[in-house]
Length: 530
Image (cartoon, rainbow, N blue to C red; front, side, top):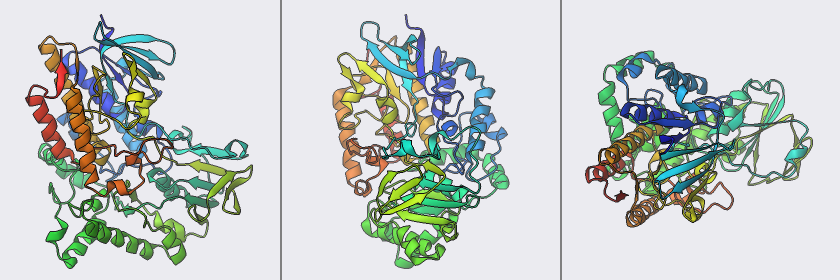
């Protein structure tokens, strides 16, 4: 008999809610967490300026009305310390820590066909068994580790955004280099620029960044609390799992607008702030003309904000469609480059050649610095599972996914029974408000386990044909969009050797929910249960 009904990997937002649901349904469950505390990505990513790019009113749990009523967010876009405080509050409120093993990492799993259960090994050599394993490992939890020649010779301090020192870092007055200008780099740059002695930014590909328009939200939150159930219901039916303007589920189609109306909509979204800018047109990632107009609007704003035209041009994205890479939400990023103590190095013009004892050589110039900050991104969506030796029979999941992930609904992978993934590849996940998608997956998985128990069943996995159909549907719908035109982490393009395939499902949260609900209602159509 297995040690646990369910073993959950990860104690971030997904793992905590999954534990709560398992307890609620009467399953025995244990969480294994690599870190020393709850929080997942919000524990590890504590770099200066770390902030959510989804509005905090929606980047929160909806499963308990009392929790919604009692918690008060202070800002429209919550900073990392506030989000971590919220997650800790949830863990305390529901006494979740007593079922979590901290500082413990799962390194191997093997499915026992005769017993229909998983044998799980952790990094301290402990072995445990569970009927079901639920991987709540996060989509952005495994950082990339790019090789920079000479990094080991650097005499100064090397900091990484994904494991910033708990005690912080004193950068005041120092010469600091930041390598990378995705969300982590952009937020770090904006936060430290006012206090460092000199900041040198090494940029490979400029991002599209839209203003957060961040603000206190006490009155706004109070109004939403009066109608939270209805508010959440609308969000669950939207494409991105969050509302973008007047609670509308769908933005307008570009061909329905004349030029003045289209520009007015872009202006409204820009002034509104946040990632909802890319929802200005429903077909922004389908129609090249709509995309070009939205991209040029942002380029014009960059030229408005940056006083040096040469620097402004270097900061202007031109090599990929807007929205095809993760957009950034900024709180004064472009204005940083008007400061006398900030230098931008364009790595397309001056490639990063090596790191020396004194600094970084780009092109023919050595930039002497005291601190190097690496903000070089993540092995998205598949990295955490690839890091575990997951075996079923003679096959490993890593080998099966060598040419790209293969799942049914992003929930399970054929040939690996009783292994569920929360917001796994080929689900909306990173293209959505993660909390909306997490809650849907946790509840779907919980209902499936309750169904199996009620029927006296012990095993569930996708039918290979259903999986093939879902993989094809995911790839075919992505190919209809502009997403594949960017070398993004959505495509795995930031990881050397990783096969380039589009990782999330582009159909949107609302459509995905209809599909997932239909599968469950049809007695879990496409899954083999025994």
